[in-house]
Length: 142
Image (cartoon, rainbow, N blue to C red):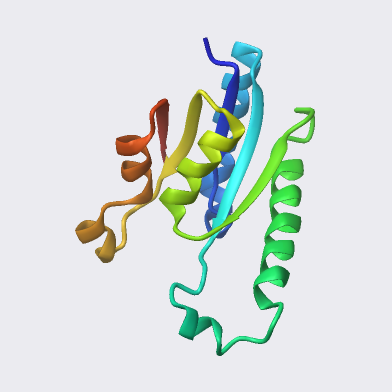
């Protein structure tokens, strides 16, 4: 039985991910489940890279992403009700998997975007989440 759904969205693909979020909301209503929405912003990757940015840059980025996520959810699901908003920093698939554990979700809903050339070598994030998640993952195609 599905009690909690985690929907992973990329705010840079808001138009496509609005469809993903709507699908997650439909499922949440169907199951009577709660809904969390997570977005991940990349970290600096290496500490030396972070040293070139002003102090507090990442905190500002997280706040901006949080504001964007709230606006995105409100615009996409105006009548849905309570939604938990989560902003993570780091590697996308790792942070989505971490959000799954912390939110105690039993279903992940995420989109499948057209892969860039690098994805052909590393594998897209949705494939990695599906491979490593210990719960069901629904991949919404465009």
